[in-house]
Length: 216
Image (cartoon, rainbow, N blue to C red; front, side):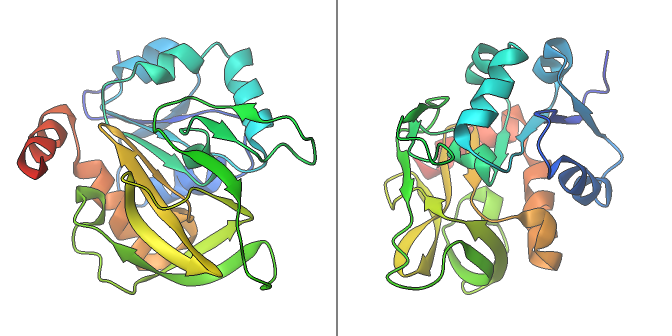
């Protein structure tokens, strides 16, 4: 049994796993890293980190037999960077391969190449966001700076909860029901990133459901 308020970071084997864990550890002692299905299912909230390509991330989840489990989670789930991208239906980012990668299908949008309109790619460094009133961005001011590293993006859609501009305007964060994803790296985004992670830590099944009811 794990403590009732534990946040579980899924061990996907990705390179940013430790930095995400340390960012949460600065906010709470109730955070662990695990790929145990029973531990993940029992968590109060779940984090899906990731860097690299969608194909590699989905292969890792498949090897660990976690795809169906993640798809059926009912607690708040936060995808970070690539973790956000694989929450969508499909990604064009396959490490140079031309085969589209089928993703988790949690948020009905797709990941395609960022149209930087001549600016260097990847989009790397600090940039401003325009957040919505989603609870993940409670207290986050319009124009706040966060740290990005990416060449692919989710387009603007009804699931956009924050946006950013680099060439085109794209989704800096997306959400549907209990699933939320951020394209930026909150673990590298100083006090603003910490505030967003802190907001996520306030969410649980009851408060998240209530918030959705109030905003619908």
